[in-house]
Image (cartoon, rainbow, N blue to C red; front, top):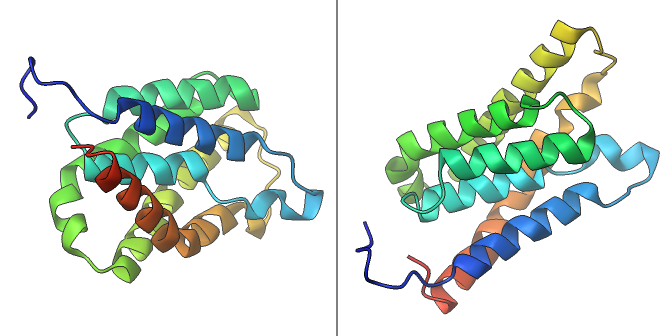
Length: 164
């Protein structure tokens, strides 16, 4: 825990990484590639919950989820619920997750994102708007493949700007 009188370095970097993740989520893609887009916001959230759990947690996940809900015209709270669950699970297991090799972390990230997608699907089925096919699950796979590179980039930024 960081004492109240000590300045916290890197809050802007954390904020900027979430802004980039939101921009990558909003970036238009061709129709065939839309379902293959990595889940940028959830994987950046997983990284920061794992790296600095005392600074990024459930409240940040809730705010990011509300932003995604408004941006994607979803039911207010749909993404927020999924991201809060991901943040909670990551905060409960971050000490174990930190010591896993990157490949094992990527598999765990895939599992978390499958859980996130399952919650989104459950909500869509509940309101009667489910028109998904098998490619609905692809963001978890593409995010798993991107995780090692994202982890390395964000870790290097965290070290360079002394974020703790």
